[in-house]
Image (cartoon, rainbow, N blue to C red; front, top):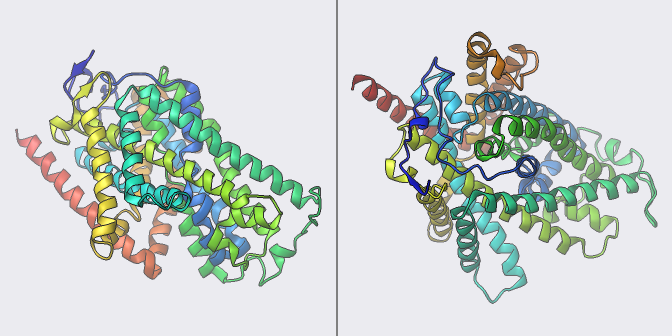
Length: 473
């Protein structure tokens, strides 16, 4: 099918209380394989936030950053298990937006979907800026905006082609990122054991010295916890991509099961290696990034440039994945009558207008960083600050509702089951409320909470008004 409108018969709008209703998967091309899904799940969460941003979290929390990442990792594992349960039961390119609509109503699907679309588009711009900065340092004669434009054109083209091209790009990007993390962990463990030449085993001195395991008390732990929560964002893309895989149900089930513990190992393991090998007070950790600082400490030649390449790959991978995720979310929203129909037109199995719109929006964000860095761009950054937490809240609440309906109406679709339902679902919801409260306590994150809350309320009001208007027709 070379061309179809956004609303095909199988794209019917799901409704609350009807978990058996078909959704928006038939018009898109099923070009992703299991290996693509597995690596998207693993690589989607490994970004610059881990490679670079974790340095400031270590500087705040000290060795207790291990605990912070373990706590937030546990929360993310619960969220992914819930999302995996719903995605395996009802694969849809709208993922949690579709599930929110089924469980709560169209206004919830509208709010969660467009908030996530906005987050991904702004993130595309931020990642483009970061990638351009790295390449500009290598080739200073070319301005940064030109590099951003090149990256945008490259990944827009990739996403405008068949979905298998996106899958191949992400497979190799993710393979390189995962390979870098595994190599770092192997080198780190060898250094801790004292096996590396000219490197003495540090023992536990860096964990217990320099102020102890929690040198800045609970306040430092809270800062590290908040930073780690948002570093895990990106896992949701695999459930969006599952709708375009050869075997959606089996694919997403396997990807979610295998990815969760590996990601926890990568994050918590990496932080443990860093704070065991280096004093958390080392100035190089926040300035160079924890990975570069650790490899430099171990005398690995060219560590800085090696990690710059890895960070560049992580940023480009995130750009590619976010353009994809934004375009599929927009297409799903339109197919359910929650957006302008023109955006959702599909050509050759690809939502090309949605891809272009998402990329253009991202590039506009880049331009705003040059034109209005202190007001409009700062507003964008603050607005997306807590969106991922809002999305997780919708996921948990939707699973709490839909699980009961699935058990009653279609138990055979429970291929992936949430552990200890409903108790761990409630635990996850309470954990999210706690994170919201902690954000309200900190000055920097409080601003993000206000802006994100404002956007969420506006979207919810628009979605509710649309729902009431549709009910009257």
